[in-house]
Image (cartoon, rainbow, N blue to C red; front, side, top):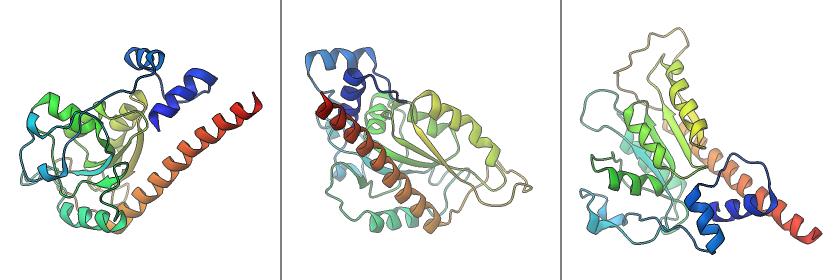
Length: 223
């Protein structure tokens, strides 16, 4: 999709939030595709290493990021959310959209973090520094931020972050506006709400993709 959208923008001068980087422009001119490493599913229970990387990008994941066992800013029912997402998106062999089968967290290896982030289409996680790894996500990908009760205003940071890096931003935050914000507190999400949000976000994104392709085809026909 991104390859198509970049080609459409480059050739039909359509307005969009997507922008070509200098490297992508060179790839367009040479008619080549960007190659980005991604991780095998069987590495889900292992520490990521260079040997676990394929040579080309061919996967897009819905991933639940969690600081499991840390005791603060933790998603307490992350496993339940992952299981519900696996049921909602049952085609686990679909390289273009599948659920990472276990909660995960980025490690300290910048290269591996960048590779993994480039393979994520929807990143779900509690507000915190870990979400800043979305800087490596592909333009148009979805950053789904979860805030502790009463901390809805914290979303300003990553909402603006998403705008700067051409990502889509969504928010889930329990409680009322008047609730006291416990920034370091743990959060338990309403799984059904989050899954429903993700389904709608992906559907809207698909319509956005289809709309661009349809418009491009219309322009081609007119030529």
